[in-house]
Amino acid sequence: MILQALYRYYEKLEERGESLPGEAYSEAEVSFEVQLDRQGRVLAVLPYTNDKGKAVKKKYVVPKQHKRSSGISPYFLCDKADYLFGEAVGLREACRSGMRELWLKVLDFVELDTEETKALRAFAAMDSGQLKSDLERAVPPDVIKALKAGGLCVLKYAPTGQLYHQMAVLKSAWEQKYASDGETGQESVHMTCLITGEQIPESRIARLHPNIKNVAGAQSSGAALVSFNKDAFCSYGLEQSYNAPTSQKAADAYGLVLNRFLADPAHKVRLNDTTVVFWTESNEPREQEFLASLLQEAPADNREPDREDNVTARIRSAIVRIREGRTFRETFADLNPDTRFYVLGLSPNAARLAVRFWYTGSLGEIGERVWQHYADLLVQGLDHSPSIRALLRELALQGDLANLPPQLEGQMLRSILFGQPYPRSVFAQLMNRIRADDAGRKLNPRRAALIKGYFIRQARRHQNQEMEANLTMSLHEDSTSTAYHLGRLFACLEKTQKDAHENQLNATITDRYWGAASATPALVFPRLLHLARHHISKDENWGRRNDELIQRVMSKLPTSFPARLTLEEQGMFALGYYHQRQEFYTSKSDKQNQN
Image 1 (cartoon, one colour):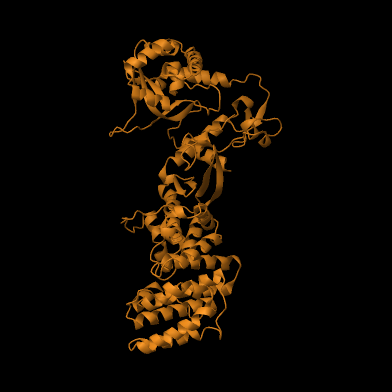
Image 2 (cartoon, rainbow, N blue to C red):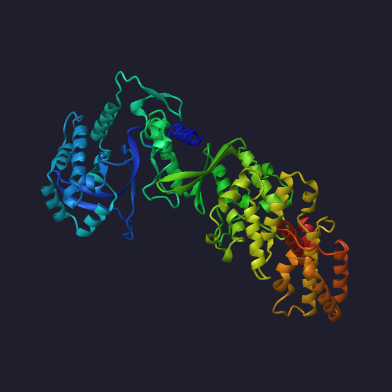
């Protein structure tokens, strides 16, 4: 399904008339330009650089470059230094011999030689001694060193300034040679292409699939999405990719599309060790922007206006819109909900790629699930829609995602796209971080939102209506959760302490007792209540009011404190604490605006 979806996108590009390499061509990133004179001798080798002198690569459509595995496999008119120069630059002469053989075979299809093709023949036939002399004369040593380090080269005919791979006479010759290589005559063996379903002559089946580049952590030269490199993976006497027969055209097509997506920041995002690629079947940029806005964080200095025609702004204000009662369909009425959406997660595995996840659905389905995700996060005090990364930073030491297990981002994305509960590992990591951080950082709106979202999705999965009813946006005084009311009580005791000392404290009970109070209430709360009586008697301004509040919360609790709380109950404790604190410090007008 993955390769078929990529191939369909290629067909849509063809339908739109976009510039694509034909079946006999490939896209290549080129580092050097080799200039030839009328006699085919090297005049110069020029590295491609930008205005600051930094090496860059230019993208060209060049004669087909099949994936190399081992042995000698030259390319026509665009190749590396070992094939173009061989022994002349201290590399293998056998590679240049292979180049010479291929190039002269292609040139045999030229009906009438021109001065350009004559120069090219002379270059291909030149002996290594003459070539070495020309290179030493025309090319600086640092460029020779860079050539040997790698990088593709194209050739230019210096007298006219025309690139050889763009000359019509050579393109025609190459296409004839390419077609002749694929002629099957009376070939009787055909195989079914697993992408297109067509019957393809065996000679047109891709033996090796294209390299996929720009996947974080993979080899810079690319890695294989489809490969068979051990006998255990093979069946029926078939070798390599013949075990999953795909026409060369279809393989090249999916490789081209996937490599384009991976080279375009608008189509990909990195989630730790996973590179996520996403696309739609439509040509509407706003539909493509929808998922990108979910995955990508806004710049720190973002001042993007909340315009109705701005998809990113609408996503980032989803929390506000949900609070106002607006649905996904109302907010994105200008997008086509039937547009097909695709999300592919890739991770490196040596020279190969592993598919971490694959999701396909309509934009409407994804949109509703994203909207549900934000609705589940909705808590008092959360005034914008956090990205996945912003949420996960709350789990990480010092807010650095590098300190988290690499799989968490991908797991979180999957839970949103599939409408599943958030991973328990996310919840457990968050509770550890809350326990470890000081009072000032323990609970903020994003952390409380994650706790609430985790619980409400668990309740929905298990059809636990009582639990779901307990999970409200703001303070729920009638909650049936003992742990929730213990968190409320802890917030009241903290406020009582702060009021008695007029906020002049080096450390509060939250700094000293949070871990014990949230895990073993029976051991800690009696002592905290004893301290509170002292604080109440000392506070002439707020003591009586705080005492009434403590008694009101105590009335929701059983006669004895629980001996210990589970991790989930500790989460409810934290949510109750957060809600009660928000109730303290939110004005009546703010509450009316949020309800």
